[in-house]
Image (cartoon, rainbow, N blue to C red):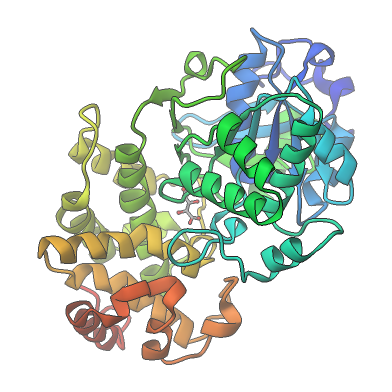
Length: 465
Ligand code: CS2
């Protein structure tokens, strides 16, 4: 079978969507760090739609940690298939990524960030890629950050790459731009902005001042369930396309992107025309999504794995689990939210529950269970803090945390976490003392009591309800 590429694009079967614009005329307006599955499922299709009417929004992807995406996509001229898996499946080939660079191409990366046509630098580097400490500021002692602060040589941390690119941009007089975090952190743009400025300030005060003046870091909420590519989707995409795609992407049909309307002056993509919501206040959307959807996801992951379930849909078929996450969302998480007027929380929860039940995708619980130390502070522990401050009970909220602590204690073979060496196999009370995860909550007697009870009950994996 031949390979997906510009040359084979015209031969794709009817019914397969494809870029209906001249890809050779596409210019680069976006440099994206972390062109993994989520970027290719979520932001790249938005720019693909924009390029059909405005050729300025091609993307250069930058993979800092591996060559996999570059090796898959570059021989395909950046093309890949996106399978929308739902009641009515659909496959589209996405054309907005022009090429993918890797960390060994330092000059090309800095050149891409510094180019005057580049108006957006965006990121999906996952929570751990930000190297933040428990209080949300840049962790200057993080090994990658400390290495980059000390020295020359190629950057290791994402913020150091950003700052190097911005320094080059300033040197060339190309003016400011917009840096968009597309990761599941609350206040993602603010945090990235503060981390970038803090890193720059430690090296070059004038550059830090320039970044503060010229660069915008809007907050954003991103949402689309994107299970890792598996053999089933690879096989079905190859059959659908009639050519081989080295790395197709699957996601649910639903997608949502809410961005704070805070862009650097000058040219910008008309994101609203492609379905993105621009607003002055992302926080209400962001908290609702992180705490309800991602909080429930992590809950299903740790409880579901203990009960022997494999996917989110399997876990939702377990009536006790489905009831538990629904109660958690409606009774414990929703009261902590301050949703924008346009967001009907009950309808939002109904939709999340429906999306979790989507049997057309196999979203593995163990994928969601990864990086709990980075995710749970935003997904559950912030809600616990709000509940404590408001005097609401935290018993149910303690259950997913206790399930995670048991997952660590058991040293589950699927455990993947940047802090794994520190956390695995340790008794739960020791892990509770990890400041970067729990902060001051380890001193909160009411929460610790609730956790102790939940932890004891989970001695029987079904003891959560
Ligand atoms: C999931 C998210 O893997 C995870 O931790 O909770 O990737 C989730 O599917 C997305 O945030 C949905 O938008």
